[in-house]
Image (cartoon, rainbow, N blue to C red; front, top):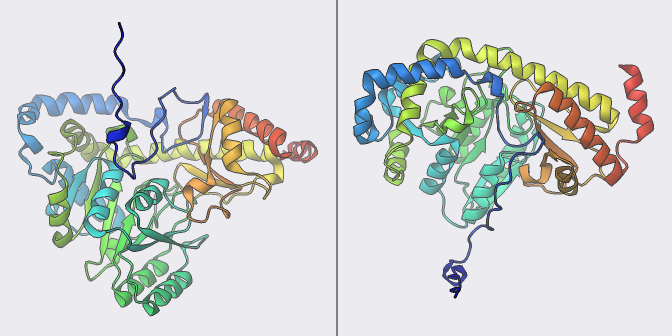
Amino acid sequence: MTSAQFDYAPLLPAGLPAPAARWTGLAKYSFVGGNNDPDGVPVEGLIEAVNAVLRREGKSLATYGLASGPQGYRALREFLVRKLKRDAGIVCTADDLLIVSGSLQALDLVNNTLLARGDTVLIEKETYQGAINRLTRLGVKAIGIPLDDQGMRMDALANTLADLKSKGITPKYIYTIPTVQNPTATIMPEERRAEMLRLSQQYGVPIFEDDCYADLTWDGKRPPAIYAMSKSNNVIHVGSFSKSIAPALRIGFIVAPWEMMSRMLALKTDAGSGALEQMVLAEYCAPHFENHVPKLTRGLRAKLDTLMDALGEQFGTAAEFEEPKGGIFLWVKLPDNVDTLKLYQAALAAGVAINPGPEWSVDKPYAGCRLRLCFASPSHEEIREGVAVLADVCRKEFGVPARSANVEKRAQV
């Protein structure tokens, strides 16, 4: 005799996200997500760090927070103090830092501290899918500010702030990814950052600066962080080790004034982010981070070149893009008749996973023919093969690229 299976459906509250699909593995040619270069993970150095730090401090695992308090492992925060000053111009102390479980937890903590249903925030029109989805679930209105080749446009930001003020609306924050923007890979110049700070001060709207990709510039140079340029504590800064070391470690950080930090600490009720990961990162990064990142970016730059060459060979002029100055993504525009949401389904059936543009924009029609390709994770051979398969699928589904144009482009190489 078999018993009926318990039905949980009547117990579920309204407003839950759609159920997740079962994991079936990565596609043969995977250009999705923020996965990094497997060959860029410093495995041997991490092994040495694990052994060293566990032998020296392993017994501290018996205490929540490694006896460093709720803001995270002290040695990792002290490393970040030095790194942020050197790389981003941020002057802070270890007590200004909170270690979190990746930048996604940072987003949640900032949102849960500042936002309520019905609030308004300003974000880049094309931006991180995780940020968009969280705002949607919270019932927050996200107004997209257009970008150009230097990031968020300050004229559009100024006009939007003025318009909202005339309606009696004060946005809760301005969310920006100023250094190697996701998905466009633009870098906001220092002058534009200063103007954003001026507008923030004028309208009383704080800036939420997501700097998760800032380590991955090809030339190793970047403008100062917006947080570093602020003179009035009107910036919350978040970063991550996901792109510089390994995404699976799930370690990020927040730099914020104590007024915000104390509120976020009250909401961070997970008894601390992964302790072993923090210990290993601190042990590895202190002596090796500065040398590791240039090696990583050299490998990423080579993969980008392979991807751009493959797109040129397979798509010809049908694929339009600006060459990124860093990062792990290429934002590609296909002809207007291509629906990348439909292309995604057909490509996945052929073994190629892509991120369709509408998932990364608050302007779905504008992004309908665009897609984001992660070039960090696949090998050079997989990049070339995957783009060839993608072109074949796109041709069958949308007549793009036309085979004749494709042949002409190959002849030019």
